[in-house]
Length: 185
Image 1 (cartoon, rainbow, N blue to C red):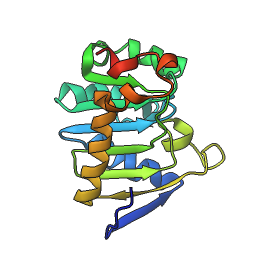
Image 2: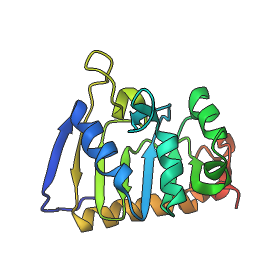
Image 3: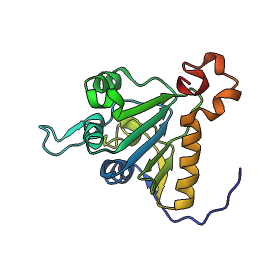
């Protein structure tokens, strides 16, 4: 599908990905954070008040969930062991505070916050991709952040179709899928 849009956006790479997408947008969410990624690994973020000043993104997600922010993630690969262990220590997230769905075909890298802010780019949801890692450890990633409502709506619609399992009925790798037919439907 080809759609022409007039788009104002911030081009981001390097540390700006963390600062703009994670710190200033995702962690400031009021209603929702929807994440699409291929890989999920533990991601450390600035956490004022913690002894070292950084902590797991899952601690920040736990606080967002406590405030009623809807957290959703579609991912292609199983999350890393460290991420799963940190997740399992957060009862609020385990009981639905962070909803996660596994789709092996997902290769989107997108974050939609409050239905109004959109990141699209190359970075997976990992410390090396979106994290606050040093210059010598961070992946070479790029993307853009926009508040273009039409684009946000289009990405949210695609995300919702994937979330609802819309493509599952006609998926060619359905037999290999860990949860065919729309994630338990």
